[in-house]
Length: 510
Image 1 (cartoon, helix red, strand yellow):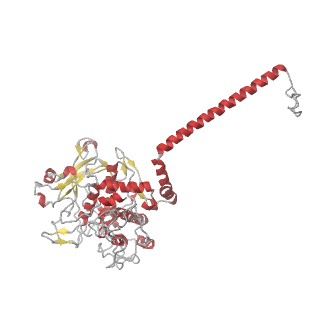
Image 2 (image 1 turned 30 degrees about the vertical axis):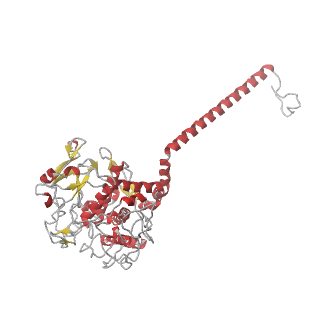
Image 3 (image 1 turned 60 degrees about the horizontal axis):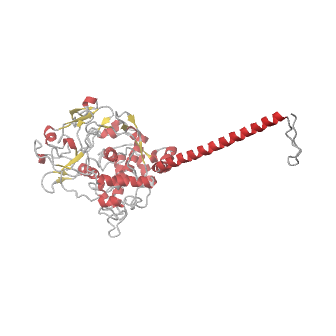
């Protein structure tokens, strides 16, 4: 809805070290001890240890070597994440999760996290109007709700003092928390001094972790929206952009239409977007169904050199650095995932600032569904994911920057069946019919269930009264009939009367 875009402000990405931290650890004590093992309120113990939910333990980071793209060491807070800040965190047991083990792992529910439940992500264009409005209202709420569990840092770790004597953290709303996380994971490395940066570094793009990282990012987004709203059935919808001729979701009813005063802006707000007015030599078209089917046929997840120059790599193809017709790396063009970002010609076209635009969520939910199709089709072994020599941050055992709780890249190189979510267009025809056609009507019925219940009760009451009247009338009629029979038997008179009105067809043999 229009109100969303008034609140979405294009953040100016300045040269500061900003990442998310659990609120209980964002203080001098946490920085001094390098420990982030918050107490779980359920039993008053760190990591819920008294209830067997987890325990505080040393962080063991992978020492497998990374590739040559980043030649530095010890200058960036993201190296060997999260050791620049914490070397002890909660390790959760069983199906428990969260930075204090007070939540459940993705896909699990209940007080003991014993209930497995699958959620369905749906095509936003086939959702009911009510569900579309609900999604947008949740984004608005996220934009105007300070995150309960997380804060961001506003300085590098060295700037906070050797013993954390100068902690610099700030509140942030839930929406912008995820904007900043995407910025932090992809920003340049600061080498010291103004403008002195190393640009060939990105912990979530241009190598193997691109798909696992964004999968976890979406799962955390959903989790925070669910906690904020209390709607634990919420899922991020997707935009199936295959063969689209324009930005179908760029309307005031959905993600915002053009401003009549400035075509580079959304109709009521300052978010930059001008879909279709991009360089056509760089992006000739929105990706097609044929493009998607071709890249799904590529059997190798990653190939050397495991970066944007990799040939016939599914990851590099879906990210958009190869031709969707040959799988060979191309320069000067953006395809697949990258093509949609460039096509939007605004905030989405900047890697570090792209999450400002809510279309980012719809786009990446669909990218994740293609990743899911590839996993189901090829069923790769864990060993197919690079263990060593990928660009920094992308090896199997590397912890994803900047997530706390910790997640390893290779742990999300698996089908979503284990993570508790599904996509409507990947369901079988019967399930898809229920999700995309029946579900909106059932949800509309749910919204007016009180009226329906009242009408049903009233209807049942009326039907009961009518039935009672019918039964009573029938019983009365039967009693009258019995009285007549008893009277005639006692008088021994014939049933056929001599009156001309009764006729002469019937006569008794009594």
